[in-house]
Image (cartoon, rainbow, N blue to C red; front, side, top):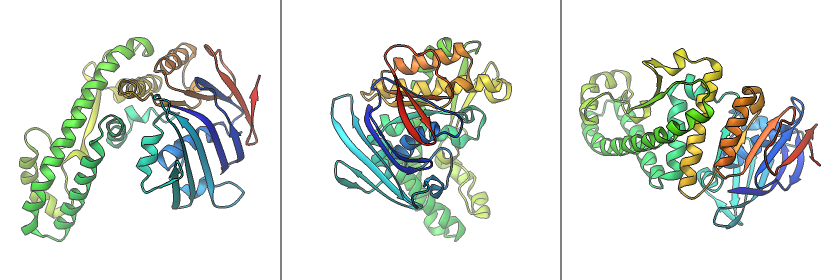
Length: 353
């Protein structure tokens, strides 16, 4: 997947930007606050419908009104060209692909697969289980086409169960559980298989990008301990009724990362956590590429996160995935192969020659 044209209107300080990126490697250089991260942010917003920098969509609109637009022309690995766009004003959005209105943001996400490394990516290691669940589920969304349907049906059944618990509808709990259990077990099985695939890729990546890192162990905790999920629900029913919430299930799963006999987040330095997070994200990129669609890689301010050796290792592996790579920074480092460099200042983008 590559972006062959990107157009941005009124997103933060990017009043109007339109350019043709390099198909292989793009470096966006500029001072802090110039708009280089906002440019990468526009691609994230186009893919996910939301930013990685704020939860408030209204903050993304610039000085030209409450509405911003992002448009892109893309070319898939099979040479299929598409035109996608997103218009957003606060909580209201409209998305189109090839002149067709889209009903769900997930259609954009599938149309523009991208992986983001940014200064807070270390939370994949040190953050709450929610970060790691989202990491697993993003990968499954792109490589297992039945995942989204299974996840959606499980989420609806879980919502119904929680409502029944709050209303103490004991007569319907057994019926809801009979629906919830197979969905939860299917979801957990998908995550377990995906974890196995990540483990295999990580074993190859750690020696290359994880200079100084010891062997990393991955363990998926399904969210209900040992045994069958149905038995776990029965054991916790009284507690669930008391609190009005389902305590066990895939919504409480975690991907546990260990080095030696210790949790990685407890013993790794911040720099080592960033390195491990980079390896985990690169593993997802490789898995998606194996399915026939190489994702776009966005590396925001990578040089400030790593020393030169780690920077070149991570960049090299990102390029080795075969997808289009975008990197931002305050100065231009040594860049391998053919590439383009764009300078952004006060929201204005110019290609450097």
